[in-house]
Image (tube, rainbow, N blue to C red; front, side, top):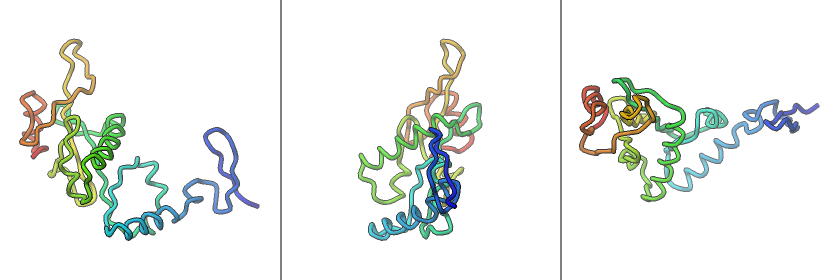
Length: 171
């Protein structure tokens, strides 16, 4: 008897592979990504999917180097992921790659949209960290996620910029 998957809307879908969408997809996504990469002549996958969606890719069946950009906000000297901003930044990076016709992964390190900049000291070969400085709203003493404008030569003149410079976050 086939197992079923319950979708968010409550609908049941029969699935002989198991009761999760991860089991349903199995290694199909990884095989397709491998084939697409071969046809493009690359061995690198830039992963701009959310962690939840990327779980659908069978990592063991993937024969590519995976680079995952991670987007962090710097506030009070600490870099942390703010999911709302990270989600938006993943989309901005995809748009940036398309608009700038980037074909080599290294080209993404120049991403500087909405105050983000590549932070080599926080990055590894598999995880490229991009940071943006969060500044407080002086009108209400609250934080609205406003960011300093990007500056490829270094952090801006605001207090957050000095914090980033002290941490060596932006180059």
